[in-house]
Image (cartoon, rainbow, N blue to C red):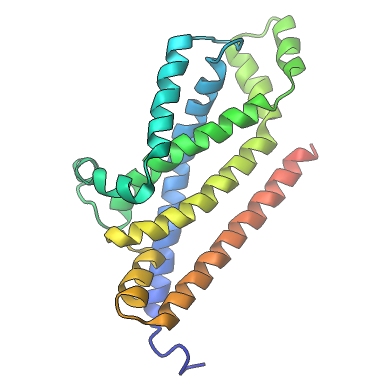
Length: 221
């Protein structure tokens, strides 16, 4: 086993794994914080919904579509001046989080919109019949009813962010992706590449298992 993994420095692997988890956690929290209200706004301002606003919906949808259409690796490079202005650097964990959030938040917003569309219209109509305000309908009916779909959306977004963090290693963001590029690819150390890929697969499996468990719990409520 030692000969098979001769180039693997487990100290570097541990540091890179910690960086990947920190990037994932930080970007996921900000993605949900931004993407959730954005997705709710996309849904509510659509035709026939509570806060129908054609122009607002059109503007939000355009911005979301534009950001979703830009490949993440290109977004990383394009955002370097903005990232430096915002956090003072384009490298490391801090430098990776802004492009991660900008890329993932529109994706998550669309998933939120889809989850809200799956809610039975009768729930909203019943709340309206009882005289509930739009805010009460959103917080007391729509979001609770959409919880299984929202937890599934968070899971899908977290898995996508894992792959994004790996790509961020190309521009010096650190993490397992950076280790795979610098050692596995540029120095032809196949064993390092294999270990980083396996660890990313394990991370994705853990996220998916937790997400499936939480979604199933909310679905049975």
